[in-house]
Image (cartoon, rainbow, N blue to C red; front, side, top):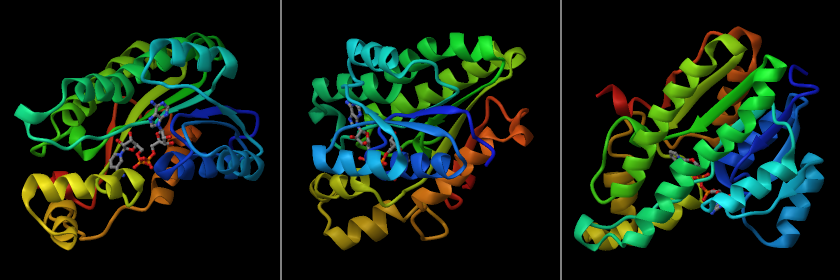
Length: 251
Ligand code: NAD
C-alpha cells in the first residue's frame, strides 16, 4: 500500500466524487479524514467503513475552515473537492449564491492550502489536488459563479505549484466533465426551467452534449487519478490541469 503513513483530508467527502476519492486513498493505506454534510447516521457509517474521522464545519466560512484545519492537524494529502452549483441567467443570478459559490469552490481551497502547506514544506512531501472542472477551462451559459470559481481554482493551483516546486510538494487540478453525482442530479430541475427542456433533453442535449464519449465520468476513476498523483512517479506532475471529460475540452 503506497500511502501507508500518509494523512489525507478530502473536503466534501460525504458524497459523490469526494467519497470515491476518500475510498481510493484509504484503499492505498492512507489515513483519511472526511468533511461535508449529511445525516448523522450516514456519516457514522462512512466513518466506520473508512476507519475515518469526520470533521464537521461549513467550509464556505473562513472560521469553518480554520476550525476544521485545527481539528485535523498535519495533512500530507489535501484534496479540495467540496463544491456547489447554481444555474441561472446572469440577470437573475442571486448575489448571495455568487458569494457562496466563490467562498466554497475557490476561497476554501486557498484557506485549506495556506494552513496545510507549512507541514508539507517541513515534511518535504505533500500533495494538493484540487477538483476543478471542465468549467475551469471552458464556460457554459447560466453558470457565472461556478465557471468563475473554477477558472480561479485553476489559477490558484498553478501558483501553488510554482511556490512549492522545490519543497517536494505538488499541486494539480483534476477537471472532470459530467460525473453522475447529487450535484449534477440537483441541477437538472433548474436547467429544465432555464432552458425550457424536459429531463431527458437536459441529460442528452445539455449534460452529455459536449462530452464526445457520451458517457458520464465515474467517480472511482477520479479516485484513481488522485492516487496516481500521490505516487512518486507523479513527483514532476505539478501545475497541471488534468482533464477527465470524455474529450469535451479537446474541441
Ligand atoms: P456532491 O454534491 O455529491 O458532493 C459535494 C460535497 O461537498 C458533499 O460532501 C457536501 O456535503 C459537501 N459540501 C457542500 N457544501 C459544503 C460546505 N459549505 N462546507 C463543507 N462541505 C460542503 O458533488 P460532486 O458532484 O461530488 O462534486 C464534488 C466536486 O467535484 C465539486 O467541487 C464539483 O464542482 C466538482 N465537479 C463535479 C462534477 C460533476 O459532474 N459531478 C464535474 C466537475 C467537477
